[in-house]
Image 1: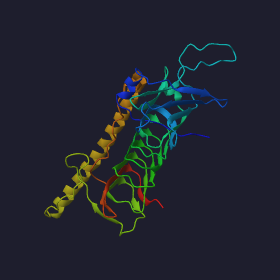
Image 2: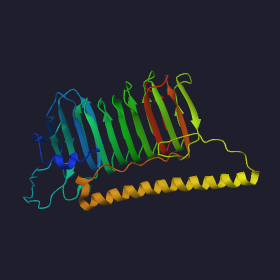
Image 3: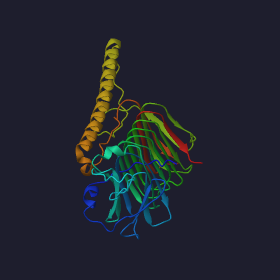
Image 4: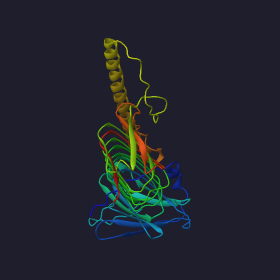
Length: 343
């Protein structure tokens, strides 16, 4: 069985956490070539945080009723000594994973001379349901998050992000990949989903109260909420101030027909160039991040750059769901946006 999962967005905590451990993770190996490691939060009376930084791996995280963080992986934990049947001893450092805890944060990351050699590694992680997640992947992999009531913060470069039965604030930012999320109850905190290239599907309870902002440059915006429940209007978006500003432009006075055509043509060219520049800058930022990691900076890197969707061009829908409430934002450059009822 394949366990999809790639993780995390940690702060400077990940680099420093290895220096102070609250206790070692307990490991057990099985006959199927997987390693299982367990570790507890230093203060189980308070919700903890799982922070994971993986260059390329599939990862599945699910909430359960226990009090430990349980990690099962197809690669070994750091410190594992392999007994080879040929009697040979390995001199180079194989790729492995590290699991450690500090200040009620459990950190998961890869170790070894070439962490990118873990391409294809699989992780299955169980955490207490109220655990917050900070997940970061630099290259690719599938990510699945199930049954989590804590806040979730995801930065992903490539691969689908699937999230079901969530209950806290959610921020997902991916470069290339579909986002599929569902909520059995409406969180009391904001939700934000963005993908440069990928469809976004979000399912909210039928009685959810939300303030909506839905934007797609190349793709439809769809919903199965009734017109009575979802009151929406379309606005033309223009670049104005910050990347999150969307305003309806004032209608200009009508010029002569030739001048109008020339102005419209120039505006279209400028908008298309701005979109191309934004995508080029995002792709360059992704390449720079990957080069830095391959140069040995994986453990010291901060969060992935945010691939902002330009706040101009495309289609922008704003509205209220069941009278308004929590802020919910869905944005993609290339892909369809679908807002559904979670029936």
